Image 1 (tube, rainbow, N blue to C red):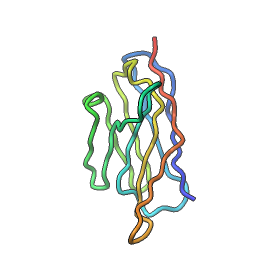
Image 2: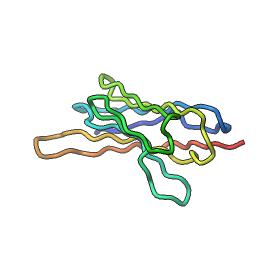
Image 3: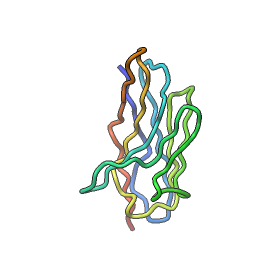
Image 4: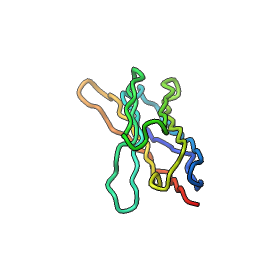
Length: 120
């Protein structure tokens, strides 16, 4: 059974940095898209950044220039470097990946979430 396991969350002050990591456990035939989502208190889950298997990346406008997504396809891992953190970045961050499991099925996988709190 494939699981996505996140790490790297924590409590930081405004302006500081954090790096989130997510790696797949179990056997998987690679991911098509890997991404990071977040859910802030009282808000809907939103896409923060995504990267396709060809390396093209997309970012939410609120994190452009501050966050960088990267992935290591050999390790089935995705990372999120977060710089210049702000209080409105406070949220639970979720790792996502989708993978083709058969000729007719693409399966979605989610991590359990890691808390990021930005506060002075």
